Image 1 (cartoon, rainbow, N blue to C red):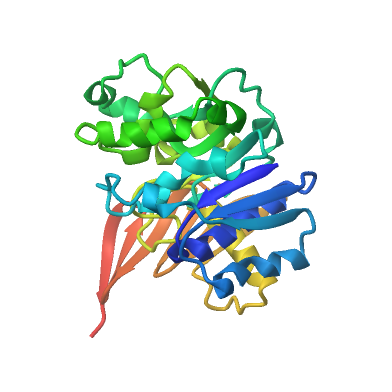
Image 2: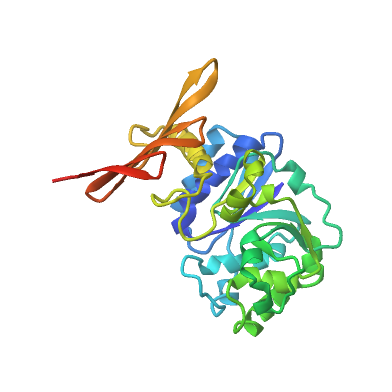
Length: 326
């Protein structure tokens, strides 16, 4: 199983949690991780050595794309870096492989990837998940796509590398990025959807469960395999309101345990009060806030602290007390 990431060193620690989550849930697979990067030094590359102590079913290769191909491409989303375009080169960089799974580093894996990885791609360039946020915005008309056209989120891509190489897709993507720079707003994602229209297979949203899916597909929460923390504020950020951020923190805690770190200051803790083996009350602490929920979902009481004041709420939304520090 080939899994590819494209990051700079600012995301090296975030990627560590993702790698761990993949290995925790895919013990039956041998996984070759490929990290596309141009600014790692030798110390950065050792960031993932600790995983070899607990897992024997993987190896890691660090590949350096030709950054000159991407230096002049359009960047208009502040929190997305030039590395987002590196996915264009995956077929050429993995020249001896026919298939690979690309994952954005702001994802977490909470289940087996086997069924996804072995999806029949047919004559398609790739497979991906429909982007619900784009569907709501009516955005596709701006980039000359019809409302019936499939538009996927490019954070999870199952790639048909053999066909991509045969059709020289990398060069077409690069050319289109320059030719379409005046109409695209979502950078590489727009270009991939426009260029590969009609050659993308749609897959179940459980394999790229974004914040829009969290809100609109609540029945799939327990089945989501790849959770994708899209947007500027991520699961590990203090201000995150993503209802599935606890999944990311679950694997962060395991990572810290494997590294032998002290968990006393771990910012995300939960505990349950059971009755007849059923969790009745859940107490959750995250950063400077605390909440108490009934049956894990019904808010009873919460405390939210910002700067020098703490507000207390009944049922999660009725303010009844504010305490200020002197």
